[in-house]
Amino acid sequence: MKIEQLKNTIIDIGKRMYDKEWVASNDGNISARIADDRVLMTPTRQSKGFLQPDMLTIIDLEGNIIEGTYQPSSESLMHLTIYRSRPDVRAVVHAHPPISTAFAVAGIPLDRYILPEAILELGKVPIAPYGTPGTPELSASFSGIIDSHDCFLLKNHGAVAVGEDLMTAYYKMDSLEMLAKVVFHAKLLGNVDEIPKDKVDILVNRRSAYGIKGRQPEL
Ligand SMILES: [Zn+2]
Image 1: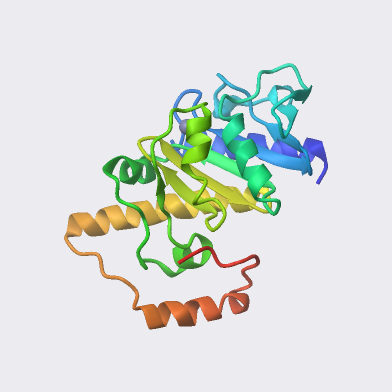
Image 2: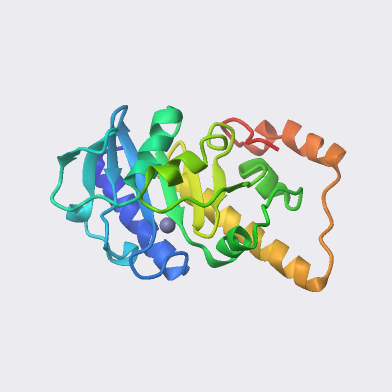
């Protein structure tokens, strides 16, 4: 995909994240890998609902600005840590979807067998320990998680979703917030039943029959 198309997709996703109230004010960040060592990154201190193409900056995997006039996201290090450790990842979406983030605040991981789509797309969604935003502490917090998960919560902060392209990462965040909403409401109703493990195995074995590409995230 050409850089202009990638910029437009990032702008579209930013608008949708803002409209869905996954990000308030200038929260959240989105990036796409455009070459092995080049990443297109959203800017710091700008609303993701009102991005323009010239606000997106190209950086290398060390965070040096290669092209662009806007300062890249203060969470660039988190994105770059993921790109360095996962060569298969081409896009990273970070947001603060309120129900998912509530689970991260409550310390309740979304790691049970609840919805078929979430099992196939997300696997278990763990919570990385709290790390101060914008510091190496945050990137270190998910070092034991990112290798085997495409989606995880950040304690008292938000959520991260990765994928082989921007829309895949965005849809994982979408599936995560839907899962969080359903579990939240089931808890309010007073009971959360799980899909039995033998049925989960049948589901996962049908992964290719559902047309789902990529590896199964850890269950
Ligand atoms: Zn954040």
